Amino acid sequence: MVYIVHNKDDLDQQLTLAEDKLVVIDFYADWCGPCKIIAPKLEELAEQYSDRVVVLKVNVDENEDITVEYKVNSMPTFVFIKGGDVLELLVGCNSDKLAKLMEEHAGEYTSCVEDIIDDESIADENAACSDSDNDNENENENDNTNDNYNDNDDDQDVIFCEVSAHDEDAVMEH
Image (cartoon, rainbow, N blue to C red; front, top):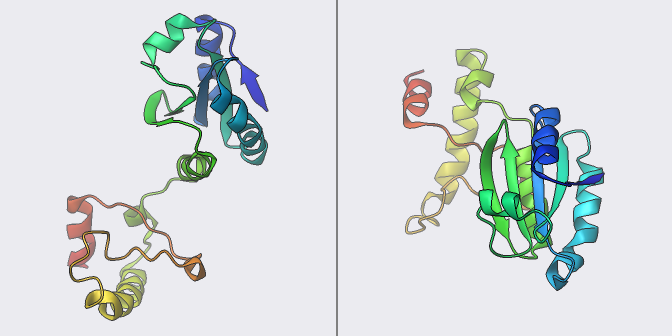
């Protein structure tokens, strides 16, 4: 369900009620064509992620103070907030990117390092990764993208996450 924000106090209350859920704020205007185009997709995504995402709509003409606070100057603009922190902004009518960002930010977040239970599972993961890394090493030698990234839908069970240099060193020591 999409909730229409009436004023700054209403927004603050909705952000508080969201607790640890992802909040997506859609800054729109009634006269904005692209806003009207993407509205059905936003409704669909709000239903799909209703257990993990709170979707709010802010009319920029009626809520100038909120619009200024979030530095919105184009519509539609989607602001992604979690735990009170702004994670990302999406400007424009790109429903595919909107869906991708909602999935990315609404997903269950865990630290890859903390999920590793024992040294045996580390060895298993390293063996699995090293085989695929070696297969692609020569192909991607001059590629500046992530070496582990494979845009193949067959790899649905593969989870990629960013690990800090400190955590990476700790994992590699094992």
